Amino acid sequence: MAVDQHQGDLRSEGHEAEEGRRRHPLCLGPEVKQLELQQIAAAPPQFKQDHQPMKQAFIPTLIGGTFALIIVAETIAVANGATFGNFALPIILWVISAFLYFLPTYVAWRRAHHALLAIFITNLFLGWTFLGWVAALIWGCTPVKPLAAA
Image 1 (cartoon, rainbow, N blue to C red):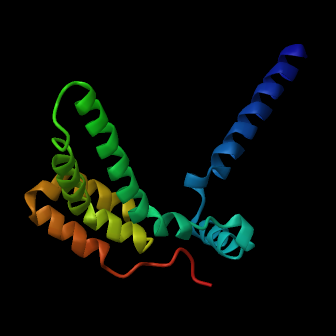
Image 2: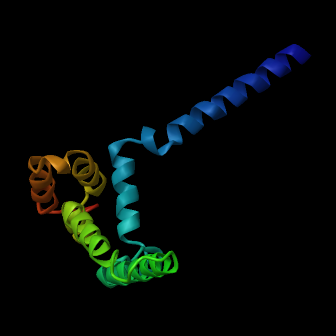
Image 3: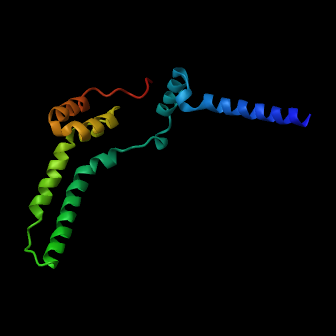
């Protein structure tokens, strides 16, 4: 009898684990996923992430960070005996070229594109070919699909 009770416990634990698998978000049907997306869309504003201030502050932060990097590099150079002004131009050119290289990702991010990660990966690995960069830029400018229909 103890063995039967133990096997019953194992069966009930297995059944609970099976139910847990069915409740996993990746295993949900399209109807349940659509319902969850509608609930997220209908959530009060305090539960939604608002990235607008971060997006508006990106360029000023990039410029400020560039100037901070120039100040630090020039201070270190002068402390080591180099002349002032050796590092400003290379740093500015590097920041501008990095921004231009990731311009398709920036455009997709500003537009809250649904395929932002894929655009970033395409831009990162194929952007150097220029054809990959143009493809990522065009992809970033395509219409954005809404998360859920209201």
